[in-house]
Image 1: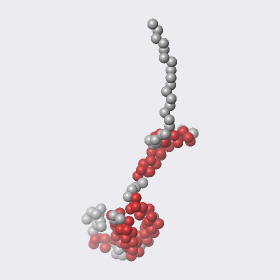
Image 2 (image 1 turned 45 degrees about the vertical axis):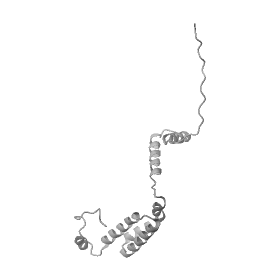
Image 3 (image 1 turned 120 degrees about the horizontal axis):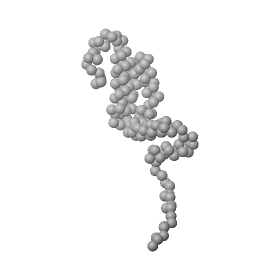
Image 4 (image 1 turned 60 degrees about the vertical axis):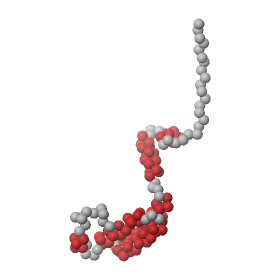
Length: 144
């Protein structure tokens, strides 16, 4: 439950003395239960973990923990989306970062169409344009 806390930081007797109503200990247990949701391998397991998280949050009863449970309830479809797609939004975030960098660099571009083309070019978009025609020049005559 407390793998990120060193034994010196987590001393149960000190926690009991400093937290007589077990509010901090309850919040710690709720936090760890929330973390176990992402250990689930299926969507059904994640639903079961979320149900036990909500139950533990109700049992803890502190206002902060109840507010956390309400927030997770509001975001539940997005939390569970991880188990249906097994992906993150890293690709879209990376593209947003590229666009933001370009926006900072291209602050002098006044034409939106030029700005859009610059974004597409910088992003590595595939173009479906025809190749340009070869320029035919005159061949110089050989002078003998």
